[in-house]
Image (cartoon, rainbow, N blue to C red):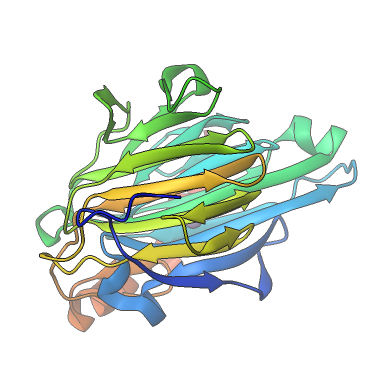
Length: 304
Ligand code: MN
């Protein structure tokens, strides 16, 4: 049992996402959380889609989602199984496979396409990917787009105990180890791999939004509630009550994504692929990315 000391972060809700929908023809996703329903409660995060795990048979034509714009935030793509091929209108692109992370700062805006890679398409297999949308502070929403291709080997691991459980630190800091992803506001992204029957503790700053998503397995939180695969646990962040400690007991071998970050206390106005602060800025984004302009930008990439 966990020691329920006064610094324990309090579990607020456990949310199970059930409805699956397709993003393009390549991503069978469940939306795990979204600012549309949860608003500031998930800030600085906006949305998380969990694709798969689903087996795709071998095919000839890559599945995915074709050219579309983004403005005002970052998309973070974490590949667990399968392979994604990406290219965008700033000239960036590449393949991301198991363990790799693509941290794309759309900011002022770009168009991109996200597809299964040629190799994955040909061979088929299990596809399992998370895409997280991270908000930007208003002062950075129109900054130049930026792209961080982070490979599996660049992501440091931290042992969580002496029994083989560990965390991969994608961004932020855990037990003195820093993740490679640069962020605009403090964001901790930890990919936990827990052996069955292990108890571990995590320290997360008070006042941070704290979300825990179980991809696989079953974990008991703070010696009480259990969180199963595809469930999201969120923690209280009331400043003087939120505490800093979380204890996890893995009842089975588990894969858990821990997302925490300093909330961005600014208004959110969003429409589809654009997330800004005001409706006027959304109207401007729609003007800037009207179909004619988009066709031009895509043609310029296709010509190369
Ligand atoms: Mn996209």
